[in-house]
Length: 368
Ligand code: ATP
Image 1 (spheres, rainbow, N blue to C red):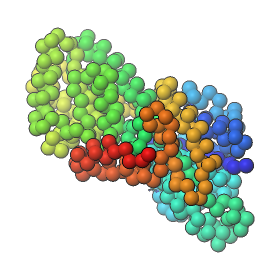
Image 2: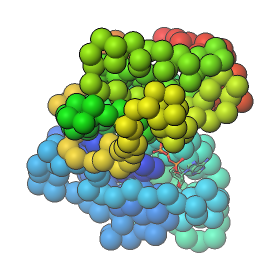
Image 3: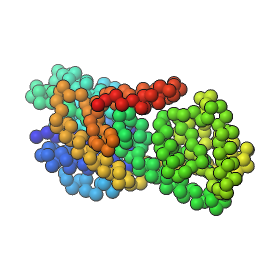
Image 4: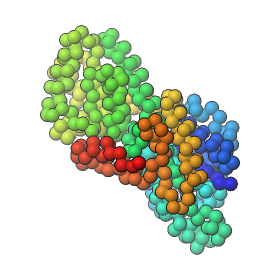
């Protein structure tokens, strides 16, 4: 019987607990042992029963309704070095783990695939240095890896939704609704900054859902030239029609047509100086990743958790590591390496201000 371990890594996202719950319970249901690795890769590097814990059915009871990740997440510098991964391999073998499912962003999944590709040389070294026996070397000669994508940004290529994105979007919409009430009372403008790094998905969809007056996203530089004028014309038109509130959403990474960053204070200044609006800035910050997951994320994380266990049980040494995705409402498997590569090239194109390329890559449907 196999032993399957799950960890959460990188930034936390609502729904990670549902993913862990589904993986633990599916593993047990299929007659496997279930383990959790605490604190992301930090737990692998540290090892021992405090960090690599065997879990029972009851250990994840109620986790669907809990936000964050109960098994912890961390950024771990040591795992970026071979020495750290060598310790990780030793600790997994000591715990008797055959397969590892990582729920995280593209960085975490890159680390996972690197770990898998290095595995033969890691266990070779462990055997040569007497840390593991010949029997252990034979028994654990291959490590099955599978990725599920936990990220509020919805920035992973090849999947329509990442675990946490719809919860963060919902949180943003609630917060903007709250702000709208006070904006209406005082006839104020609010500039709301939202997360998303290189991806404007949260800002764009929140803009639609809250009928914001104007949005700034990284993928589309604001206006062909004069965003100040375009924004002010739109806001002034809405005000002239009797609207007492103004909401402008600024994504992290928003830029202008001359490719300089646009900050909430830049927007604030324009609304005050050009339109004379009483304007406030609201930075939503970690509220966006807080609270419990919306039903969609719980369901997505659960279905993907079941599929992740199926995938590791069906994989062998020749199967490329799968990433569990969702495409057109169906849970799918994609090659993890290709998904991460494509995600990185979108981010690189945006950083290089090559928006045409970024948009083309985002639209690519390259894997069947
Ligand atoms: P988020 O999208 O929320 O930032 P992420 O998974 O991209 O999540 P990272 O900080 O990039 O977050 O990665 C999390 C951890 O994964 C790192 O701290 C490190 O331990 C491991 N990791 C990331 N990239 C690599 C890599 N290239 N090689 C080995 N380990 C890596």
